[in-house]
Length: 406
Image 1 (spheres, helix red, strand yellow):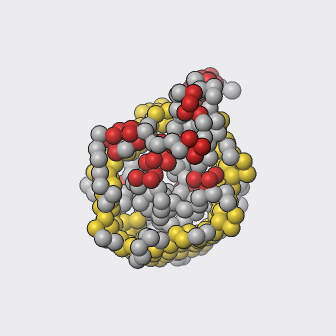
Image 2: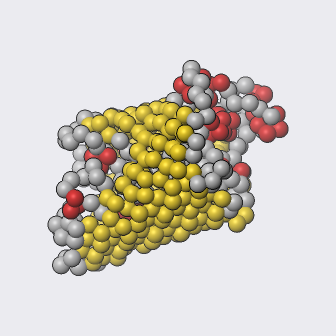
Image 3: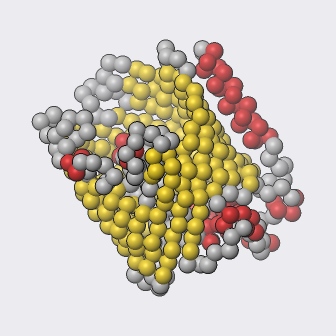
């Protein structure tokens, strides 16, 4: 093991031990949403598939079920004590009293990133991963939601300004109509996160990057219909393209959809499908047809343990340049060691489908601590073996994130 790689592992191990060892000794394991048998997202999030914009119930659940408490009496089960959420769970740590029709917030995520490809120099940098303001206003059954933020690098697909860096970005903005009194049906139009697969926070997983369905800047303009009723959660979206990309020839048009069913408590499984066509591919400059179809599941066999899995088949046809068929998949286990303290193991694999390409593999060892209201810290150790038909590249990455939201 090289000295740089050894230093990276020691740094991440030390940080994870700090997160783990300072946890209160009386902490119990508290289940998250599907661990409670609730597979829906609309009770806590504005977006039917989950998003940064939280409802009042989402803020309450986040405080009651996710974060670490530090008084011994806090480690009784919340439903046994009829516990009320802390005032700090409200908007701006209790500094703002918003009506039910208005949901406002902010999301700030910064981090330290180090990457060491084999036989290459160590790359170290600090990142501003997200700095967004967001809101959702409801008048009768009509809703308007959107985000505005700053990106010093990246997120060019969501950029409102056209500089190489330091851009103003809007990842989502849409108008919607709730079709029934219980808001189980929602139709909306605008810039929307694509409904596909599991919306995990690890947006760099290969299932997200290869299907182009991450929540950083892969959102598209279009119209969507979502339902969340009983054991069924589903959404279908007609994609009109990303109008923050120019010229029009590069914009993808098609559809994206998923359906998930939760036949028993603490288990849900679903199917996803996506098809797009762009008149001009970014690389080959000719018409590009892209398909992605997959399965996904969530399961909590025990209160502190949950498994997430997704597997997607990918097919791309580039006019006059042939076609390729590949795949991407991941499996993750999340063990809540103590209230608000999580240990995660993730394995992933991919194949882009190029001629004679060999499978690539990745492994994540992660820890996350929800240590205060509206705040958490996360550490990811990632090792990937990326293969082509003739080459192999081993890459070790360390990512430390601090996340604060209003």
